[in-house]
Image 1 (cartoon, rainbow, N blue to C red):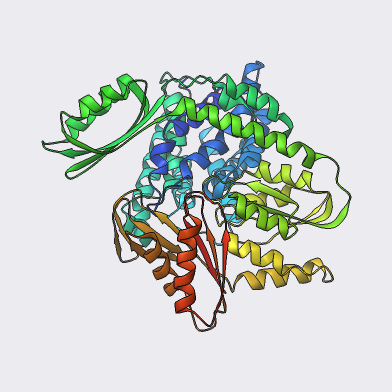
Image 2 (spheres, helix red, strand yellow):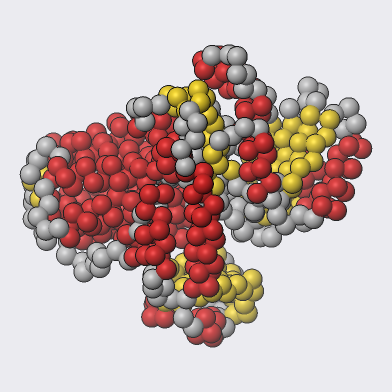
Length: 561
């Protein structure tokens, strides 16, 4: 494949190779989440984003001859519509900018690639209201600057060009903890930047002739839009999960575990499975592998020390359960999809948890997009929801800071309706926004009122830690409960009620008059009532509201305003 120019057919193969490499590393990238919460999803979001484009590219590739215009349209439109989370949206904007340049050429040279890198960075930076350095944007910019430097020097060897660009981008990635203190505190590089590196490295591997399987599985080629839900379910039902057991454990080392030992252990795991993550830290090693025989991985690990925190999940069974639940959801959506009477204004809210869903519906929200912290909806999900609401103006409440960019992207793609994104970062902010909507006011007046009111809402959420870390001045151990506020971790401890109470204490100010508590699917009514009594006793001057939220992962969501 090595040449100093890249035609459309080669470009398609390189893109698919980058997508496949990112997918293979997604769990590792998820592990780079700054906060040690059980829903790190950068790798998942970026993978779903690029796979949305990969489906369209693969379809073109299967049809035979590929021209650059059609290829670029597939990459750009597929990633834009499939974008999930901030990292996924930024990745889609990088692809959008890159393809704006290369689509004008039948064959791409080093100067063209350099210009495309620069356009990619320019487009992505424009898409983010307040760009932060130390993120995927910085890594992309580092690659673009190096690409321009090499192109201007007259370099003609494409393989050497790509190698040096990737080397420089990797150096920038390693510097991200020095740019963002929160990364240094957590001891990780930026996860979005690492995701971009895996795309670039996959491209390089394919370009230099490494044998890569470019075929997409039935799960990867099934669409997630409502229009093809039945076909998607059918495709997923026949999906072949090669390795059926997700196996995780920690090795408490009793012998030296050096680099060679680690490589030998990884090589053994690769012989029995995939999706391998091995993270060694002094006297412990964290292991993750998908395999058909967890016992083999455990027996090998026991040679290095005792095991703890063992967890084995049957992914085939979970997959079947997921399909069943998805089919139920699709069946429930059918009446909703029928033509509704035209209205002036409609509402869409992103929500998770049957209790919170009912609260939004009770407040007049027309359509609920299932998702949130555990699964960020895509731009395509937003567009499908917009189609479901028969209104001239539609307010979207993302209710998560990682979903706002996808909502904005959907807004930019809709031409026949007025779409207004209220930048709600939490569920309580979304509830406050819709409560403050006044039908007699204009769209502009309501937009201002709702946006102003959500600024008065402080939110805290209680979950558990998935790893040891030290952040926001707090030492956290795996399994601890954490109270996370709008700007960081507010409380840590071993008792849910105490952590929640301490979190509320940190959230409160003299101006607060209302405390709302939404308890999750794992909290009993009795425990929730007990917490309410504690809060009422301490904050007797405030109104206290307790409601069932039913949300997963987060034991309590609390707002103060």
